[in-house]
View (cartoon, rainbow, N blue to C red):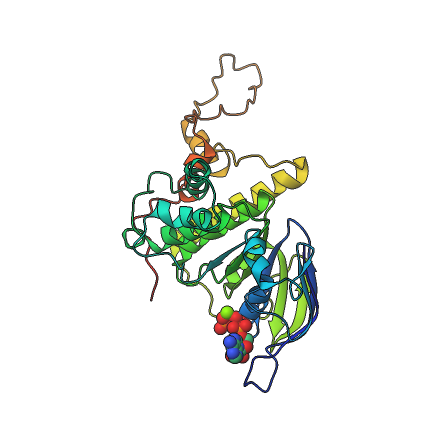
Length: 331
Ligand SMILES: Nc1ncnc2c1ncn2[C@@H]1O[C@H](COP(=O)(O)OP(=O)(O)OP(=O)(O)O)[C@@H](O)[C@H]1O
Ligand SMILES: [Mg+2]
């Protein structure tokens, strides 16, 4: 799906190459973290995959196309298959949420009918149904990033690239975005994410490719961040920490379900967080006859109103609270 073959990238006017003999392959459906210190070459890799740049030597093959051989006029068509999100969201400030997402489709000449159908679907997927008419500045940082993700996904790309997508968000909102990316990946989209967030990388146990001075120094199928001594960690905050744990537990549950059943089931609302409710609301088992040993029955599942998963934001599904306390970008 994505293949780097001994890639060297030299930028004009620099003595040392930004990427040196970078060689890896990403299979369809993988979730890959690209990690490494600032300047190690993460964004350079993503730019090569997106064909914003070409290698000085070696080959980058994405979706079966050698990107150096791809003529410029074909690049826009290629990019329809590769969505991208960035740290600074890159939304159009004077356009509404709907228009921001629709823009991608308008540019490629999609029909009005298709746009009317696809945009609300993408917004529902990221939990933003009902916010179509807002302008970006009327949204929290997490919501803005979700708009950017909806825009990247509206075209149903096979690959989603994310360059520090949580870099401007607070820890709880970052968990929310990570959840969303994990869910998108569970739906079959290949995800490559550059990040400094050691906490996520450690906890999600996905493939990790680590760069140092432009070279791959580690490629582990389910690694942690590695030597994290030099990397700032997420600050411990009791409530946020609990929310993060709940969210990541849910991701692990989802992954377990997929690996066991081979199917993508929507996360059930009566799982982990609801188990607490079940314990609280289940009536004590009656003991009509003290002679009889009590019959242990599973507590009845709490009644959950029928809700389409797509209508819910991840934070809502996971009981992570409202979005009101999210903070916006720091710059
Ligand atoms: N357009 C450019 N021209 C010259 N040098 C560049 C250019 N883009 C990146 N570089 C250099 O290439 C190296 C890798 O940069 P890159 O942006 O890929 O790093 P990064 O791992 O994404 O860092 P960060 O974590 O800070 O985003 C750096 O030394 C950087 O200064
Ligand atoms: Mg970068």
